[in-house]
Image (cartoon, rainbow, N blue to C red; front, side):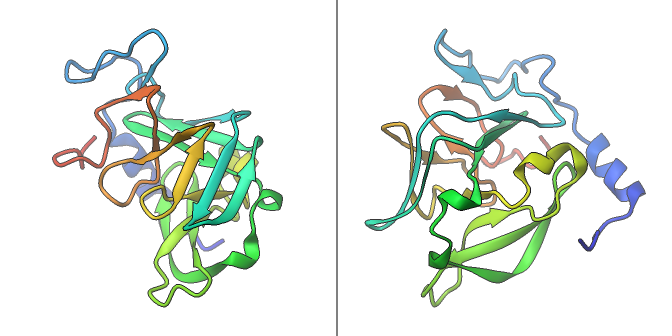
Length: 185
């Protein structure tokens, strides 16, 4: 993996976060007993195994179905679900140019729907994540803003802002990073 940042830059990026899930800020919504607050999630993020059914559709085509994989939880972000590659219809996806870099997970590669002339990223993977995130190496995460994503029977809403791929469901409250004025969260 090409490391696009130095260790000093990585340390600076990690150190800039003031909210780390240890105390809910005053503007955070209070969760009901059957809900989670994204403000209780830690930073650095953590990985949890997922056993809830996940399905991903492009129009009517089933792209992925799984009851395995992981969810990544990070302060201010809706959970992101990562599915094992064997549960993905990989022939329906094509790798697209470009990447992004997460100070916690490493370099992400992007995937578009095969036949999408705009080649808009609909999914991403971390082929060689940092050690703490090795369990998600090669697993796929999908953008619910571009696809129909379901967690159990609930259709997922997209985390605001377009960049983040968090899955907003009825059992998670915010506000969520990505909304206007949240770039320094």
